[in-house]
Length: 99
Image (cartoon, rainbow, N blue to C red; front, side, top):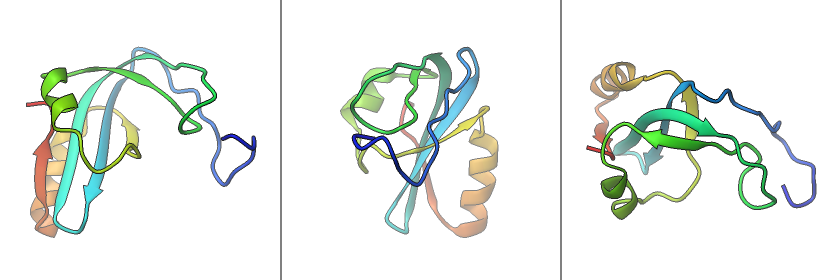
C-alpha cells in the first residue's frame, strides 16, 4: 500500500452489505464473525481494501479475544452456515469470535 503498487487490487466494497470475515489459525481453527459494512475508509495505513463493520454479536468480546493478526478474508453475505459445513467436512474447529 505504501508504494502504491502490489499484487492485489484495492476494492471499494458496498456500504450496507452483510459481510463475513474469517481467518485460519494454524491448521486447527477457523475464526470468523459476521456483520454489515458501514464504511469504506480511505487511509494510508493498513491493507489496500478497508471496511468498517457493525458486528453481529458482541463487539467487545470480539475485540478482547482478537488473535491471529489483522489479515482476514472478507466475503459478502453471512456465510456462517457454509463455514459450519466446511469445518465439519475438514475437521476444523469453528469459532464465531463475536458470540
